[in-house]
Length: 183
Image 1 (cartoon, helix red, strand yellow):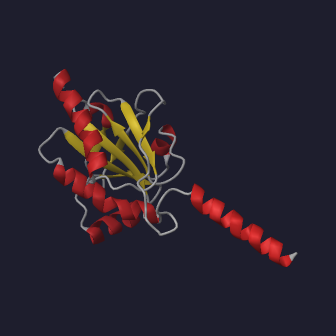
Image 2: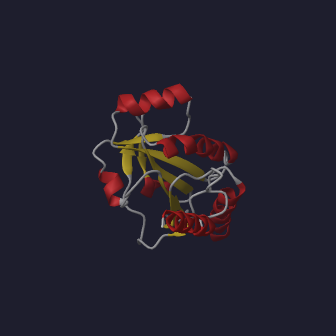
């Protein structure tokens, strides 16, 4: 009976492993998939950054904007932050911006992390999580791609390499749409 139980457990593991995406058991990380946004127009986003500047997403029409919700206690958030910084650098001089919205933490905590990592991207504070609630953020990191017309087009839940070719291709497509539309 014990031998039968072990064989069944082994067979169940093999079946489970076969159903997992390639590389998961080996520890390879796959990027969180980009999904089409079905939540209507972009929710309101008016927040102050760590450096005191005020950001209003509605005033950023004409630019493609990546809106990333993150926190210092979120390991995947911290792992993807350098890729957001690289993406912003790749797109320098183009109608593009990355807004990193800190989820519910103090200025001191978020600012300490930003200073230690020497991040240059705008870090906005959402201490009461009101903006996150309006965007229906249900986990971290959660990232939204906003086109030049101010419409959320795609979103991702989970860690993603934003500076890798698949992400850059999607953003280039949004920038191309904006150029063709004369934004």
